[in-house]
Image (cartoon, rainbow, N blue to C red; front, side, top):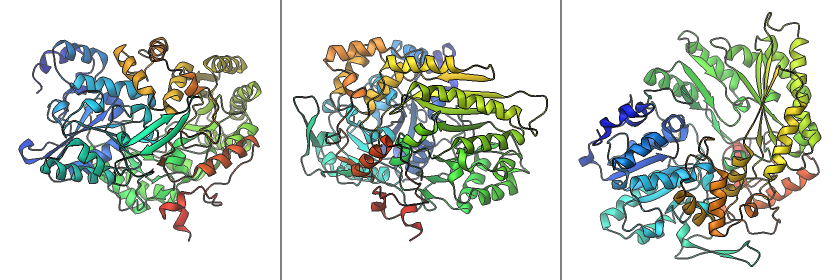
Length: 613
């Protein structure tokens, strides 16, 4: 037990977040390991424990001899206040040891608004925030995850970034660290060699210069660093490491179920979707592998629900066969099957019957836009007719609640497109009451959820401006006023946080001092409405002489050097430019199974780009 911890646990919400000792957590003899790795999730326990990537890498690192990976989460504000008051530093759950004593301190970057928590956790741990102030080989701060595709806002604080999938890359880095620790190398010597591990980006080995107009003039590597750093990925998913068990939490978490991957990547090419391009090409697991992993997880954790995870689960080419195989044992054991990522255009009666045979879960679809013109602009490749057919199938099968996700502020969007969201919701309501096979004695509930468009790196819309906060507010009001029935619930995302997300999604190294000032002003948990303060962030920007609008609301030219241009995720900038131009013509691109669009991902020589050759 951490000294002094027992005296404060009864004074905080959910003390189970802070004690460790859960089923399947890994405990090792400290004297028998030579590398300590603190895996930090910059949000609370319930969010971090739901993250599949953390589960995979935690087990992957802990199977290495002489390596102990432990979990660290951001304490909620009540716990943090007591820790600071009693001089209890941030600690790891498995051993209770202070994070500052670890060799490697790793963060997963899932959301741009968690960056303030990265700094706050380092500060609470007693680790110098700036990479330039950390000496020796210990307290090496590393980071990976989807937000690492544009790591520049965090370049001042992180020693190195992992680009892409980490199962092999993380282990290679740890082995190199072990060798340099044994030799007594300096931090600089280690980082220079680490930069030659494929997928590892060391920002201190790149000099960035800016032009008079504020755009980037050049990014120049030095000390032998590669000109471009290319992401890593696992080509053979059946052979890729996947844990036989997960740590089982004491308290309810956000996604409290067993989670199994069916594939990585996506065939679709929605022009706003960063994940769809970051994880190209699509790589599937076999039915046998997914079934085996699902059964193992249920046996070792006790969960009675399985979520089949991917960017678009209904695009799994053997979905019906997989469901048949799973039902041979889940039905008898009363284990539910959840498909969290369904597309409107391939939801069948057969799939519906199978996933509802044990336990009926809610249905969620993402048309993304209210009019066909705008769906073509974003390359959604979904029609209103397909949506109506799908919801009619669901209503006939007994569902009476449907959630539809949309975005507002998309490129070329008009107020008519926004009103189209409400009109589409009304058509779904009408389809329920017009269906003779609907569930008797029950009304329909349709939830429209609209988030603000955020332009992201490595997408066809990476050059596009975000709507101003005022424009987003106007569109949100127009959406609400367009809804004319109580059968429709309308939700929308806070425009202020969408603005800040866009700033950091497309930011450069000049945001480092802003982050440092925001931390000094007390910014943390910015992804939580209770703690986010745009006024405080604006104060930090003003103090540093930086305009956030320069990053969020400015259209960029195709010729501009982007902050992430020296990083390579396999999809070419030329492809993104072509797709952006097609968007303005409302011209669609077929999915990867229909026709190759020459995006560049074939350079990895695997996945869907090669499965039919």
